[in-house]
Length: 312
Image (tube, rainbow, N blue to C red; front, side, top):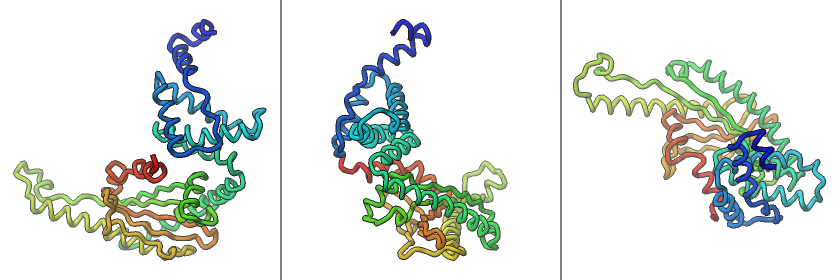
């Protein structure tokens, strides 16, 4: 009862529980959702929530349900409805609320129920991509540490990676009309961020309080930018010749010379691991380009929302 709940957990938790019980619970009634239906359900949940905290509780509740779904005494059709609801209502909600790990797990667990055969194929692709990452990382680090030109630049190189979630592999396969998730060209994504120290002007070195030499500052900034671009192009050329790898056909995209409308700049080189057959997208960019991509108008979350929810 409410009194027992209040005695055990306090008034604040009790009020939160009461607000949670007033959220609509009749959503799992469809086996298919259009983009508009999905968005309407999300908006309805948000509008009816008296406290946004209860939305996090609902996400946790649905995530737990999916984790144990196969053990619940439910008919197959009911399980399909729950999975559809999680995929088309709660995963988009998690995306909007910024809990991306929850979004990914909701999508993958739902996908496992809705299409178990394709789910298994995407899992094989992920396993191969993980092996390909370790091989690529070792070779990239060897290039950076042994190449005379790169070593002479006094630059630092940061390597990060991500492996596409299973459902995202499936979406990419559908959008590109591919036969297998292993054909997705960016099943594994590597990113190399080049950070070159900024040169200092004479005034900065001497610490003088006089007016800054604008022309010298502009010249140094231009030289620094050009040096960063040159290193990016050189590094991509080295990546094309990694032992055990080959560049993909039509696999180079130059977003430095041809920056996107939103200001995004980077070099994209697609390569393939010969032993595993894994396709990899390698992004090479300077630290300044990376900041623009992460925090500016080219931010990943913004354009992803436009790609996957463009009908709304």
